[in-house]
Image (cartoon, rainbow, N blue to C red):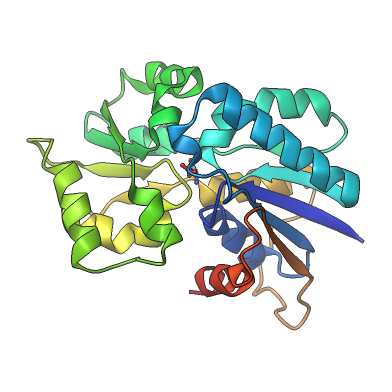
Length: 254
Ligand code: DGL
């Protein structure tokens, strides 16, 4: 049996996997979380690249993998070109902050890009910024610590709202659009909207999944997917948390 592999440092990549399942529930998926070594956003580029390459290597040796989706902005900036060099015969899809659609939809506006420190520091993002800086005022918003809320299952409530309000209090202007440049953040979108007062919030999950199926030559589902024909979903986590499948399913089908 062949699988579509999704990888993230933790639970965040499920925001991308859920979009894939919504479109093609009949496919077989493997989701791997390197929760032993997370958060990736606080690590060095070399560390994240080595961790990513190691996990993908182990999974591709064990399973017949038809495509790799790095459902993590941080790991994409660290490892995507090495992965594409190594796995030439299958699609290797990365995710990057959805700055392009944000700039196109809000020309001249204030766009905030929420992401990990590493994503915002790396060349991939700086190049992206340079490409769209003439179209809008783009502000990187590092959010160290936000990933931990999602990992702990705190998706709403006063503690999270206070944390987010502190982040937005740094800026003395309103954002016209916020880009969620970390795959964990869509799970706390409602709290982000509440704390920022901005309701135009976009993430890269749909674009990434569309790219995956396009590269695989799998046509877009124009009708309601047949949920009677579910494929397999296998979950792995490097910390060996026994309740991981349960936590993952809760987020996937929330
Ligand atoms: N989910 C990851 C991303 O999209 C980051 C989480 C982490 O810092 O480990 O960047």
